[in-house]
Length: 330
Image (cartoon, rainbow, N blue to C red; front, side):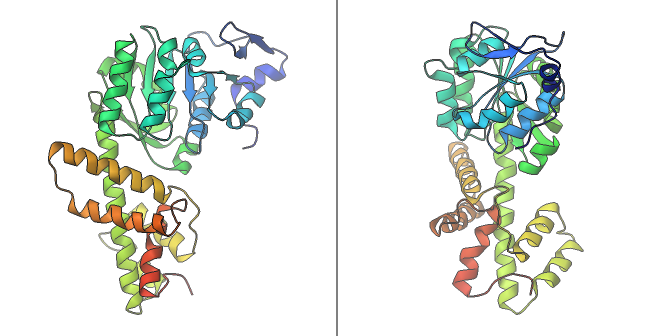
């Protein structure tokens, strides 16, 4: 990622420099008065642009990532880099975390030098990863038992909205705590929806990604059905986009499928994980999800043919291979 026009880089270029702290990381020698310091853990494809947007909104920012090469662009821009989650938490008022799964969240919290070791009663931990409901509530218990405050706020959207700051924030937690962190969430999200108590943000994320996976699986089947009947990709797309089923998902994925573009915006592996989480939660509360179970197996078939790292639209590929057609522009 190229150097980003983050505000702190201006102070560094003006000769402000960095100063050592007793937490083992460096920070700018000047900070903005009245703005909370935000710690950001997890600088992957989603997390990095989200962190940049927090910095661009004027918040003091400190970052941490398990693999240090992802921290380098931030360090080069003058952003404070912590050497552990504990050190980051000791420096921050609000800690945002977006990592790969529930095990990674638990590790960030509980390991030696983890978030729990740096918490105090004024620290708000904002859990933004897509994980299961039980994992979310376990994280909430760990944070509150350690004396901190907890918000679960996974996001709906992919890398493009993450870069643009237009993710949909799905917040769960005490209303006063959610409102306290809302300005930080709004640096990354538009809108921010308060879904209820802690855990309801996660339930909302599972709801929307359940619908996403079911719809994508059904669209893939419909396109292969149409192509096997001799219909052209462009004609099918035109009919969809001019009727009741017109939506950004079908418009965008129809276009990329027709172009043979399966570069990962939201990979098959992630969609399979999220459908599995939704089915786990449905089993806990006794909701039958027969279509979702079938959709998950469609994504599993794509994983089985080594398409797991490709975009979720690659769910169409095993169907195409089975039938012997391709839904592509001529």
